[in-house]
Image (cartoon, rainbow, N blue to C red):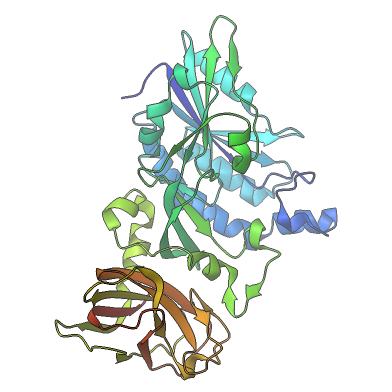
Length: 411
């Protein structure tokens, strides 16, 4: 049920032409003509319209069933007509959209003030949140935000810090990872208020989302996934960045986060990406699945094909006997001499000793250690085995489980 005294407004800047802004990486060292051409190119706008129209708006439409919710789309006169037509068509399909042509200023407070003044018979809480055109918010985003939609939180902001990050490529989402980071732009909200006696809307000034906490109190909520951050090749923040080694910048970013297996918690809140996730998960390949109550004892080696470029995950459980001092660098998991010529393995380190090659530290502790890690291989190789080698730890251990997977969604 919606609360008549609470109004929610989402705001999306749809490629607003704002050359003085430092946010646009593509504007660096470009003439004004080239900047506009690149800003409104089909290569750049195509994925954004696909994501916003087909993935985001169906989710946001569901908000209107329970809340007083409108979504402001800011666009510029310079936006080519074919893209404007798509926005106007979306407006016809989704009446909760408010199209706002930016003319020098990007302030939207007057739209909100007029809307709330017309709809509210008294004072009201007004919550404003931002989301980019190529990111998604969860279907229960407003349910989460509603906990803070109260006069007592006026002047504060809300940062939802748990979400999903995934790569968008060829019209599909791929390689889904858990993302936990404070002060993200996706769904960052600010609590304002409308005073009926004054017919005036009060909202703290906009600031850089990463510096919000320097200007006002920020509520951090990481209890449930609230957003999906999209990574794709035509984004402004990556337009001037190439590859690191032979691994794309996007794959480098993704390799810092764990892949998602928990469908219910992390994927079901985003109904428009479920089919992509299922397809991605079905394309995973288990290369090695070893379990044994006896283990292989000291310095075990396992045959496994890691010759293809792509993303991999190693899951393991090791058992240590007797008194063991915890050490984060107790063992090494190595790819050996066959791996030393690989240009880049994101998530592992290259040893100066050829027989070790690319490796990962494996911690030791009393009893058993169970964990996993992921890495990305930049190119085809001749790696056909991995092995565990003592390092800081010199005692006996038992391999209870070792699984190696090549993750899906990789081109």
